[in-house]
Length: 74
Image (cartoon, rainbow, N blue to C red):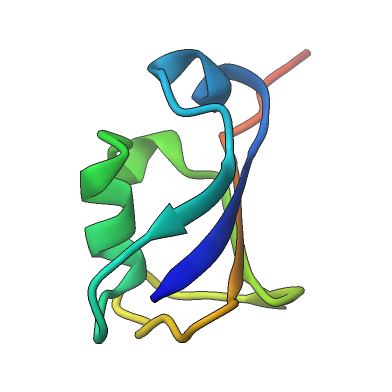
């Protein structure tokens, strides 16, 4: 199945810039993160189809996954 991945800020520097990605049926958000070599600690905001998501959420064909790293500042 194909999902669309949107990465922001420092996550784009890990190699994959975002776009369509082919995954096996039944893939979870965690398996997507594993494939992209993104650790849980690197995720500040996780959204699937404009809704809050969980790491164990099962993805479906044409889902849009948005991953934003933690943001710090002073």
